Length: 291
Image 1: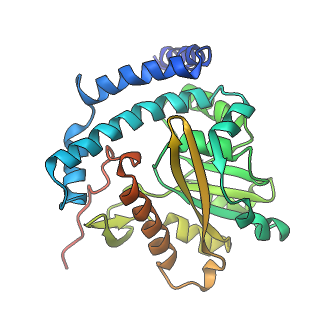
Image 2: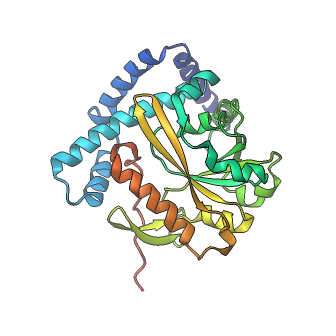
């Protein structure tokens, strides 16, 4: 059964590799109809999240955001698949990095970095493209999947642009063993904590939210500077990425200040273009314990 699923995914990836981007977007338009209308994907979660996060907006305004979100989600799925086979030249053309100067001081001192990202914009496409645009080995931290054949396939496709992949459960122990320097460990840090007893509670999008602080914990342990990557959509299929320094010396920073800073930056860009964030995930499944 695992091999059949692997074969299907392999054929799917290589079928889209043959298509020009404009044709691939026809499939994205069709996928949008499936995600939003027939039968719909997690619509109750999406609309509940939007209602709680934007209480001052009307139902019509939230519906407009939802429709744009589903269109972006469909595009992002197709762009992620295409990124696995896209040429390096095409990858660099579709993602523009605005401020290479930010990482230069770390490069000069051969300092490794931690880059915090969110499920915002076409994060898979942007991550693969960044590998080709910064003089650091990008280390992607990922959650393993049940089908090892599919996992190996996806790892192979991601790593073709130079990305080093490390499972989330081992990154803490292995961060100092990464055999490439300088390197930049990239963490997607807007999920709900797996353990409801862990995490840091703070306001986020008008809700009391439990925040993962794995990035901060890893930074304090390793002493690496922490940066946040802001993604913006320039037009369909084209993005910009901008790096923001969160903390240069995490060991000396007040506890939770790193988490507070990168969450506030993420919130700021979500409020600017909410349709680019992943509203379909269960971000608020935990409730703060009552003392």
